[in-house]
Image (tube, rainbow, N blue to C red; front, side):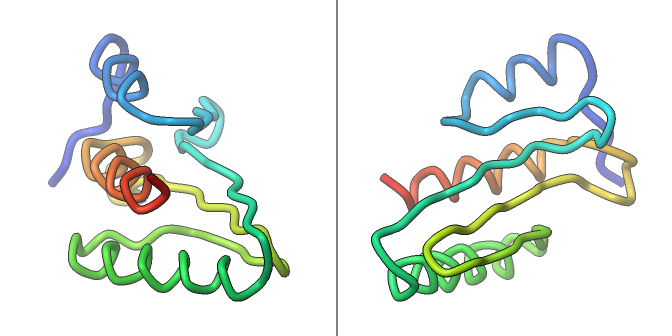
Length: 96
């Protein structure tokens, strides 16, 4: 089982991310992405879905026209883990 990140380990992981917001009450990170149109948003979701499937770690997300909001938390661990940080880093690379 993956261990929940706390203290310095959590802070160090968050420093490696671009624009993700940590919610202590939810034990999760989230990011709201905006795109030119629905097609670009959907293309991003497709790339992110493939990365999530490869990682075996699936985000909670929503899409409305040109925006996609992603929330990452490892439910089995009860909060933020290295799996969430790693997937967020991959998503950041997709956006680069």
